[in-house]
Length: 184
Image (cartoon, rainbow, N blue to C red; front, side, top):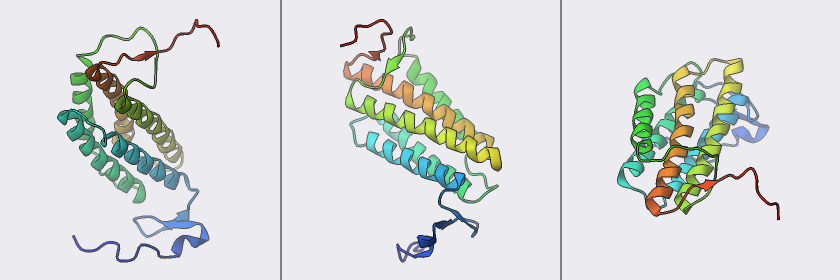
């Protein structure tokens, strides 16, 4: 691959617009740009999770997720283009099933926390939910790939289960929400 960014600043966005991959320009406040920004933020938080010591299978999975999220951003950058595949969703589901088999069934809601890597996963999960909301906002105006929408939905589930798995592996309990508690 040749040099794609020979110059980092172009000044073309100084007017409040940004270029999409198809050459069109849209306002930086466009729902599509908001969604691409949320995907970038999610990818950054997953990168933060990956700075922690993780089991190899989770680390490899997260590396793949980062690439797929970049693909999803590419889909948004070129309306009508599709890069996220059904096998990407299936891969998340298989990992979810594998991780979930070792966890106890939930009877309570869980609060973000536990060990540090689990807390970062919870943060990634909450950003992932924002990505999903932003994608549906785009979908209200211009169709977004159903596979991309399913991928993000499954990814938030995976991040939740991964947080629980990391807590379990580190000897931490899930942080349970107690609806009947004394208020300090």
